[in-house]
Picture 1 (spheres, rainbow, N blue to C red):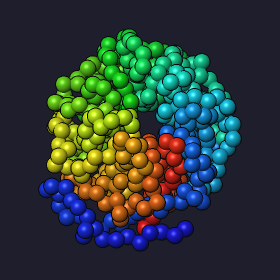
Picture 2: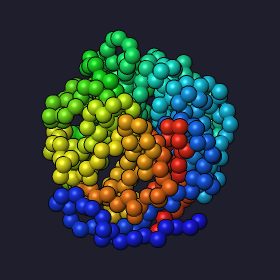
Picture 3: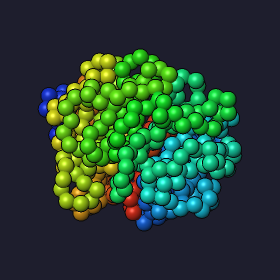
Length: 404
């Protein structure tokens, strides 16, 4: 397939204090027109990569808002085709999707979470491209938007964290923690009351990562209001509120949070993607924010010195080393709000010290204009380099393949 010839970055605007950057060695080619089912009106809000049919390549499970969730099977070269009705015909306000082997049978399973329709969906895979719905094993329904999967209590099984909202309702937006039952893998125990602090957080995104360096998974929660949260794990899956360690926070409407070692010091930092509003008037500053870990999960907001300044809103993005220099870079969705105007996806390159420069013109094809949403990262075409599946709100889901 044709590859874009890379340009040098001599004209790229750099963040303050950033060292000069070498020419980007890889870029993305937009193969959407030939490799992704065409549906410009689809609300494909999120994707997750998994080998659903056991053929050795990665497929894509797609969370669909106001529609039935989808499975796109890969032919091995990155070309995706819709496998109809794999997840049935249930429609819902599906916001995000995650994959894990929940029942420990060696096959990938799929979890979808829903917001307005409040019906989360769990499917167990058979390793041959088929899935069985077992949603009754989830302990509760809720109006949710954030989700993370990981082994929080060290028993070797993936657990589930659900981030809830009460938008348009009354009550407390308490996150859920569902522990995988070691006696019956694939069944879940609601440990919310015993293992989570009682908090009210309008969660839009969650990341599980070892933020304090003690070997277990901690939790950062992206909130649309009022502040983002940090919860620390005691090693047994019991969390305490340590939000004060995030430092002083300006008001943000945050949609996603990701962990990365931005400055190469061996500690995980946090990046938050934000909106000015959910397509209402200009409200909060949508600037993406980077919090640098000072040690022991104590963070300092160093956004001004390290990230490109912007006024677009971002519903999602991903951490990916797109130039293969060993340092995590960022790909960021962009939408102009108010107006919900489609914009080009952005690429920010890390200089290895945690300073990021906008290299969009050298890395992202110009046709990647849309209402981009959450992203999935993985090697779809088998060349050993990360590719990107980019969701969209009433906007064509896109596939970017990386190459030299």
